[in-house]
Length: 91
Image 1 (cartoon, helix red, strand yellow):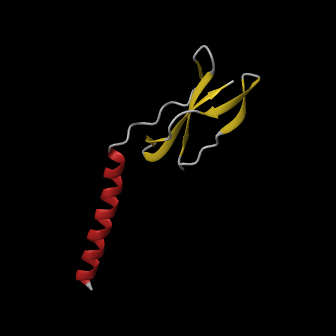
Image 2: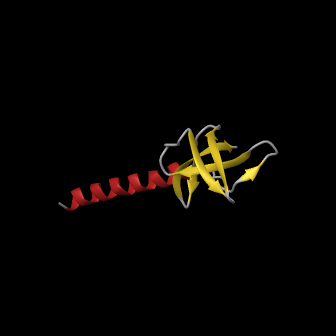
Image 3: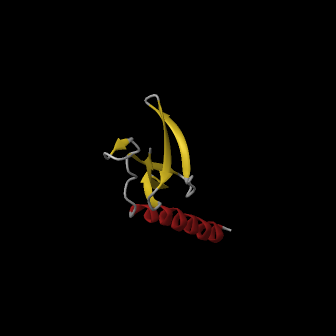
């Protein structure tokens, strides 16, 4: 019984350790502030799931901005956890 507990404990430690090292190579997620590049509003959206809307509308400073997914979705680190970021432009 003791031997089985050691094996299970070692396996759990290996699995938990591999989760931490899997996230170690990720860059921090970009900031999600809204910017303006002269032609359109710009921003990154960060989501814990790799699931992003292609288009959505959001009110900002009293105006409605329609955001369009423009960039590649990339994995990143958000508060120490794996998340995904996507680049949007809005008009």
